[in-house]
Image (cartoon, rainbow, N blue to C red):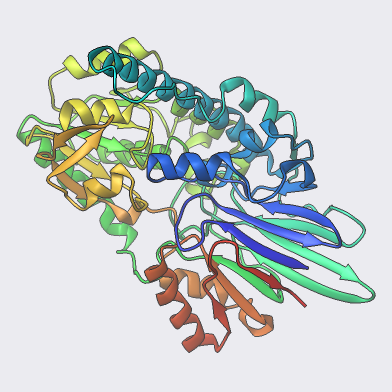
Length: 471
């Protein structure tokens, strides 16, 4: 068995790991790389292997940095199965179509701007931007998905099989255990996917895995300890109340899947406890509207607290002052609405979608607050905002960052260093080697050191394109 790391190595985007077994090729995830526009375009458009030579894809979960380049893979000739949990299949059906739509709209916007510049300056850059893939491409990709319930052993070929375990990161998220059998010898490889935080809410906690020989482990927060989840509600309430007093708007970039539902549930609880005023709350994302319906469909993934809402006949993702915004005209109308109110909109790293328009209209007003609720990858607009750069680019134009910036990292769906070490504990006695992915180099290096000190395990932070033979 040979593994090659192609994505989410020394960074957190574009998860893509290649397994080769006796002439067959399998992929663990096929995510969209997010970062500088030109670099992202190049990375996402060109695979380091021929898509036609891939035999199967195992998808850990639906987040776009793990699933978002599947339409490109299929567009370029891949015709094999994509294995995922039923909840992940349903989420991808909504998310990949939405991603295709955003690709089309962003290309349309950039081409409109290019034509305008060309009219003013004949020497300006020629050529139109093509979308990476379209909604139709996403629909074609969905035809290759194969739903596999969690804990269901699945045969890939005569020497390789897999089963999945609850990762606790988002609806339907899994860790994958691969079994390689040949000539009486067995090798077991675990791919963690993204590991969630115990007690995070909505989904069940991460579950322990059986012993294995090798582990590919995420390291998003490899050098950090999250604050207690108990402090989240108070911090969010303080941010909302402070902004409301000055008549401002709270602009929240959030992933449409998972993070948006967490925020809605948390705001719902704060309102019930009268800890915040009855502000209008807008979830401005057609995808979030669809995804929330999918969440309701998959109550089998919920933790006990969220199930209790449903058993009592109460919608955990709905309340009187909440409005889900689907139509573009309704979204545009929010720009003319005076505060205070809350807008939750995608994308979570501020790289595409309606959040860019909300930031464009509100980032220069000091009464407003930009509430960052998750990790922001290097070179993304979200990272520039977190770093409080005085001026940030939105649609290629500079804007002054005058709004207040608040980070609420406690809501992160990623385990911190301590939680990753705890999750690793039952696996540690049998492991020969650990590979750290999905983390910037500083995070991965810190986690590698912690693993080596606590468990005396050989731990590697691979580079892009680096391969290893697993015995």
